[in-house]
Image 1 (cartoon, rainbow, N blue to C red):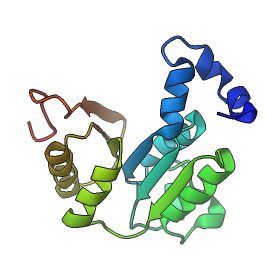
Image 2: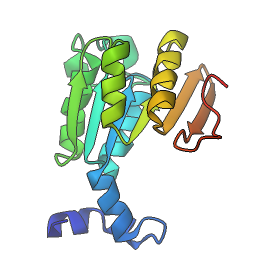
Image 3: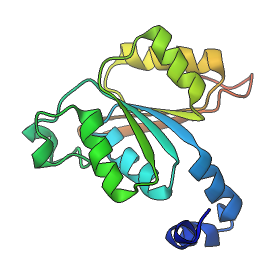
Image 4: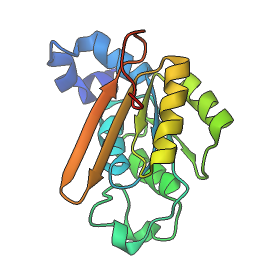
Length: 173
């Protein structure tokens, strides 16, 4: 970690739950996020700001004016742009040290498994059950931690499945 990063992340480093070792782990970490909409937008902003080193962001949708009041990573200037690419631009402004790789098309099973294998943790911020179950299957097979969020109107759910443990439940469970 260089001096600029020490200063930038000093508040994290002062927390005993994170400290220097934890911040270095964040900087070395790789998160795969599926979805850059209502859930993925704020999650990606916080991950980049916190210093996650690499973020692979998958979304095949485009930014629409109706998204902007709740999908806060996007801007009016990016209307019509792919959401993963729009998010990459915004995240680069927040933290240029976070390397964001946008995947601008729907990822299928084989490629999804490859992306999951490369990540330290997977964030499911998608909006359909077929994708959720595909993500879960890949995480179970590859024993990767899965953070799954869902929201509709004013209700939300969040679950963390640590699939590195053989007795851990999964999304399907």
